[in-house]
Length: 166
Image (cartoon, rainbow, N blue to C red; front, side, top):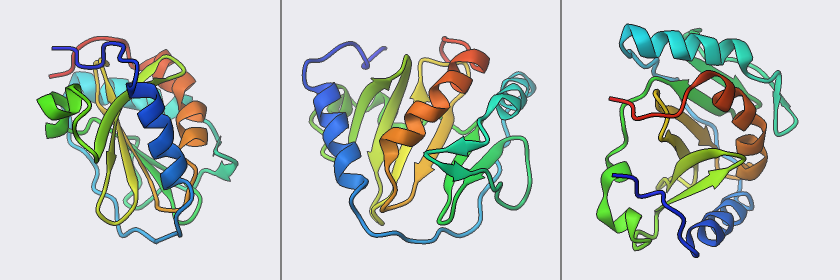
């Protein structure tokens, strides 16, 4: 099921959520859990790690602990990328597909489809859709989300092929 088919309101809603989350105050996050995907997904994630930019939204790369090719970070409070995560439950939620979930929406940025979820603490979590590995990006409250998504799109497109993960 591809609920990310073009919808007239999906991109404006995603843009609105990006703007709203970019105007909040900052908060710090705790440690990062390293995903444990299968071997095929791990290989894709290692390729992604090698292709990631040194800067995201103008912030220098500063990987979280524990160090892993499956995680990356930029800035403080950090924008955190985790590759090889499980498919989020909202990805198959009919309310999201129909645009009726106020905390989740699908959209595309520079050729990469994302599920955007607004978290209770104010941060935004994005997970790639229609790729052979799920890549999750958590942007802390107060950070601009659009710059991060734009900066990471080329690396994701280059290293994580289009397809269905699982």
